Image 1 (cartoon, helix red, strand yellow):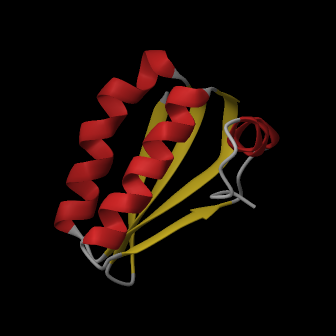
Image 2 (cartoon, one colour):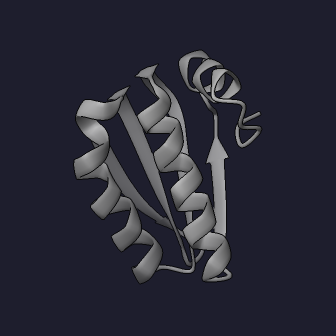
Length: 96
């Protein structure tokens, strides 16, 4: 999984590229939580995610909850079809 980080108006924009599955989420969890701790909010651009499973969706839900608890902005932009389908299969409406 390639990760590109850019700052955007106090938030951090994280572009994820590749697979977002159980094999990648452990390493990504710390990186995303660090981004939330260090910035006003977190925006995930997921247009280049080729594969996503329940572990990936669980990480999205965890990041969203953590942002909400900290009263920080959280958004998912450009969710790819695999991300939208994995969220739908998991019964989560966090991705449109």
